[in-house]
Length: 205
Image (cartoon, rainbow, N blue to C red):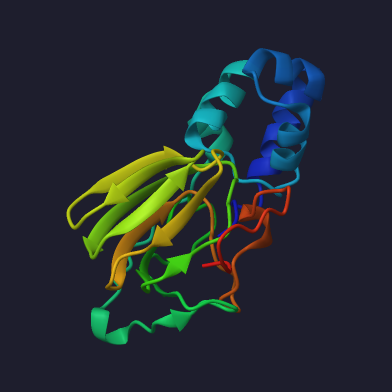
């Protein structure tokens, strides 16, 4: 999932129209110059919180920045979905969301086998996890959050985090994220890994 092709350009155009430098927008928004530069080049998907701060710095609204097209109506039938094996991993997922220009969310059903531990992730955005079956643990900045069926977890994905299943059964999770997690070849997107390259307790999910 990527931004609509005009969002980064629109942020840049608005900034230049107001004769603001990246450094000044960074000061006004509390965001880093590097992050804002990546937003303008459509490399990074900003969270809604980040977009709010950018809009304030540019004295405009989120709606003006997004200029989002009409949301298409799409239904995903269970019998028509395919479970994809994640490359270089024992985990699998099903895509629940569709793709369209300017979309803000992606949703998957993630199957986490027993004795599984992911690498460490950290990337701009937010994620909501709902436990469908089994027991799974999210380790966020070394704090453990254990999920049982019916539990949910909402967190900033900028915090270093990883997923673990140390129970005796597989777990199924509904994951909604503001960042695309897998590419068309079912590999974990490289930008979601923690930049220090730390690989702790296992392969990527």
